[in-house]
Length: 312
Image (cartoon, rainbow, N blue to C red):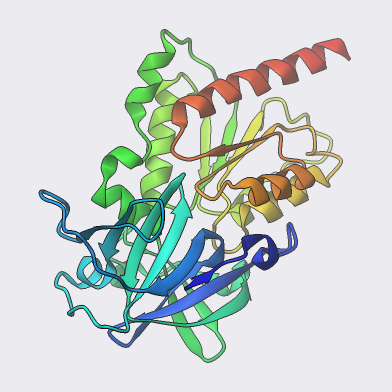
């Protein structure tokens, strides 16, 4: 068993780098962000659960916690390749959940830049909402980075963003302040957009990664007031080309843009990540899928920004 020491593995804040754990399934090479990995261990006996998703093997209890096991070969290829004695469980921690994924072998950890990760062509990724979030060049190998958030959302939709949460906020008025959102997952981007519109935020501009949002900021005419252009930024952390930490650093280090309220909205928020975001100047950091909490925080930050402008 190997527990990942995330506080040592996580890279310096805002460098636009990540570390990928490469693993194999049926001879094919896949990857997961090390920041999502709690530990790796030799596969163990699993107790089946009735009426579970076909890709859910069941549960096991390595220590004090009961953890769900997902048969990743079965999820990806539709049928199990058999349970090998040397199979590995990659135990992940994101969205405040621990989930084990069965894989055949863990190969290595590679450090790369987010600029080295390209969005896969829709014809090979299963369409715009496929489970391949990116293709990374690691040395001489091409590694398919899987969208584990989407996999879990498909297996257990109740663990993902629930648009119905907005109803609990009560009656809301229309808000036309411009909100910019960077989110690479097509599925989650649609959910976030629908939720914010339901909450009254109608002036939304969605970006598939931090690079495109940053480029759009830089293209705003110099000397022009930002009030009618962008009132608040929401960013994921994991994104091809430019991650959310790098985007946060660029915005908060820029004299023109640093006053824009910025929320990091990510499945990766942990104590270590929270420290990173705070050092970079993020105004708030929230864990997906807390969409109702996100709206509350948006309301607060926009009201605070208005008060600060009025006081000047």
